[in-house]
Length: 177
Length: 177
DNA sequence: ATAGTATTTAGGAAAATATCTAATAAGATT
DNA sequence: AATCTTATTAGATATTTTCCTAAATACTAT
Image 1 (cartoon, chains in turn red, yellow, brown, cyan):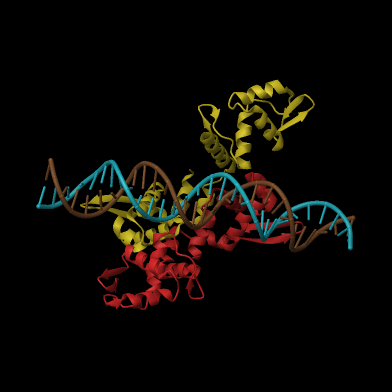
Image 2 (spheres, each protein chain N blue to C red):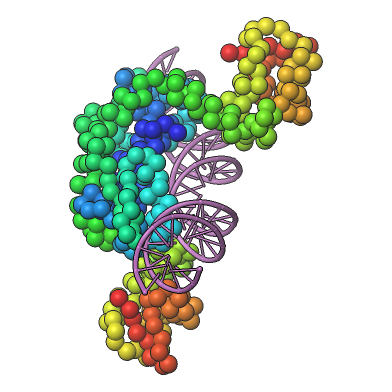
């Protein structure tokens, strides 16, 4: 996940914000935070791990306790900085597509067909990536491209048409975009 | 919800962060954002409403379009400011309890018994709010207090003991805390 | 008015996240 | 080593959030 987003998510939760506010004043150990928040240690630990991965807190051991403290240097960041950190939306977009593709393909084969329209479109566009837009293809050619990563070429071909990625004109198919 | 939390949540989502990044450069209308993000207008609208409620964006109408733009003044806030804005944890705590109570009580009656321990404890403490700690009560007295908001006093009394809010000693009950 | 365009609301399904209990690990003390 | 104390992980359930479709609304222009 994007580091910017990860950091924002680490703070955008009632309990984690309260944890951060407590750590802002003094370093604390897990059970102390848990009892103040009325949560179990396990849940508190889970939150702290998330905050740690996001680079918001660090911990060190002292005797029995794992003392957690805030990373002071990230605190001076402004919201504007987060927006500037994301200067090229197309970049974010590409990264996002890669994530989806990575999670639905396993060694070149499509494992399942995503339920969300957005993800389906990304996957379908990926399958058709080597075909040229506005160029006529036979049904056989289309089927072969799909078969390279999933056996149910009929379903997928139909879905591609439904989401406007593929157009059929008699025996001829065209890729759009 | 707490304003601080609301603002953080408004940014801590992949699509909303991307929306903010686009609005940072130029004001946009709903469908433009939707097409760039590959979402429906309805979903995009939903995100924008959230951002608007959090005070992150505003909109004005121009001809066909609803033009959304960023509220520049919030952009200069630092993460540190969010932690300082939440100086009294007890306040947040009380607010949180009120929310839970509000969502499980309907005109003085407990509608359902929450499954989560944390919420159960808040609800039970609320039911027992008028009883004094460390003071002996008869079972009948306890039952009446519970019956005032829920008919299944046996279940609730047992649960109160299970979570350590109530202690039984022969025929006598004590409220803890 | 009426048709066209953009936005918003409502309701529900799917996905992501938070929370719990129980089991395990890691370090300190005896 | 044996035991105690705190922390973490695993697996299950509950809750919240995201996202869609369909319907309603708001505004513009003919």
